[in-house]
Length: 235
Image 1 (tube, rainbow, N blue to C red):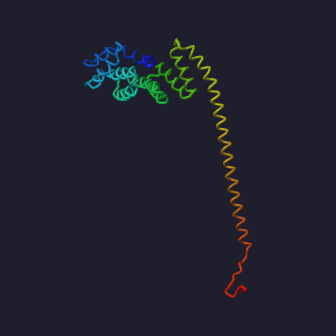
Image 2: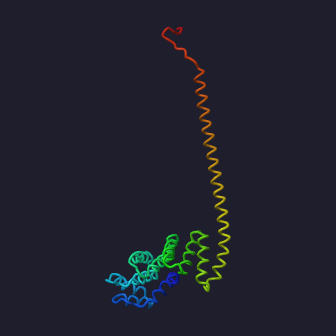
């Protein structure tokens, strides 16, 4: 779960910068989590989130513990429940929920969560970086490029700068290819639509011609000779 630990680092750093204010299970759960004992921290934090007046960070620490244990569905459930009760750290709930969705391969949902976080704090550089990665996974190259550029604006000294700049160059080529593919697909759609319309027009004209011919034959047939009982066949 090394990757889970890495992507949760920003949220954990933000939490670590806030002094503990709650008593009870939260203090013990926080200590265990900081000691890198998520399996021991989780059951304590499960109690903490149920205590009256609980510190909302208990939800975040519990979710991070679940992430490190590989319990991603549980982490997602905790974050979704906690975000509705959050007043101070709502941005971190959305940010970490986005991280969980990334780990689950749900990149469209992840992008939505990072967008929520950015809506609360437009200067949160890691949210732009993570949303860019999510956009890249779903082949939204334009969105990915815009977010990578914004991330570099917010964090110009990023150790990932060189790699991101190289990726942006490749994205430019990918965007151009995507636009060409989209134009080709639209041209094909229009050609298919024109061919379909032409076929329908021909079928309509053919049916009309057949109907006209039938009417003409009927009109020229005149009266039909009737035969009565007087007609007898030679025996």
